[in-house]
Length: 76
Image (tube, rainbow, N blue to C red):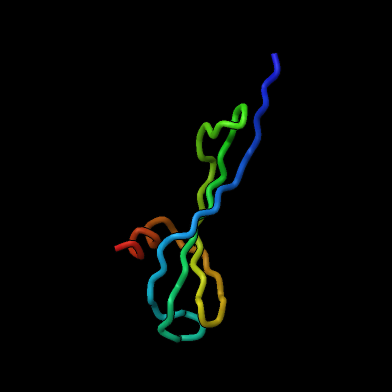
């Protein structure tokens, strides 16, 4: 019996929000994104193994890691 399995990463851009950057102190758009790593079996995603969230400042380009709780606060 042969099993074909692997990991795949999925990138998803989330809606942007205006906020003050902690690095350049400018009130500009921030672009959050989500990256999920999934275990695949026969090229079908079975379950998500890890998930991370990042936000990028449109002024200085600084990229920061945020928690899932902070991501939910941005979506309100």
